[in-house]
Image 1: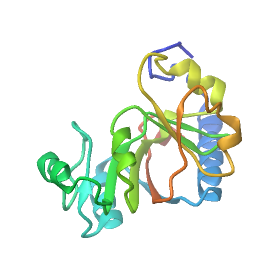
Image 2 (image 1 turned 60 degrees about the horizontal axis):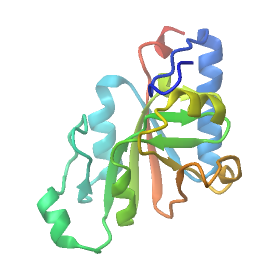
Image 3 (image 1 turned 30 degrees about the vertical axis):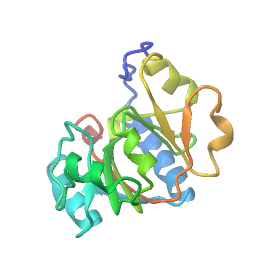
Image 4 (image 1 turned 180 degrees about the horizontal axis):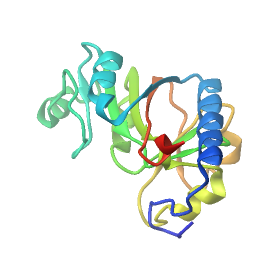
Length: 181
């Protein structure tokens, strides 16, 4: 792993990669998330199924359209009103804890959405917290979204930890590197 670049650089053999993803899915489901696997060309449709008719806030430069996106202006006017949904992209997933690390769109979680749809590419899953910390830029803002079973492994003095009460739906996208299995 390279330090501080938000990119895992160690490439695992396909069987190891599949095992990491399986462990991650098991742990994030233990924390109460629903996982929606899909291919790279199916992300938009999967998000539409997950979000339904909910008004959804997305961060700037979110890669996929959502059915009922809320404009920034409308979001500002809502001031304090709980959101129906947010959609974000995770920078990394931590296999041993089932934790998602957000570096974009993380402030949307502060608005208390009823549903959080998060997109994660399978090649962005790393084994544990030390590998995650090594892969992230220590100067960039981060939010670690975790369930109650994993919060003990993350130093609360190191990062913001979002123990979310919203329903978490993970859109897990099979990356090209993982599909070579």
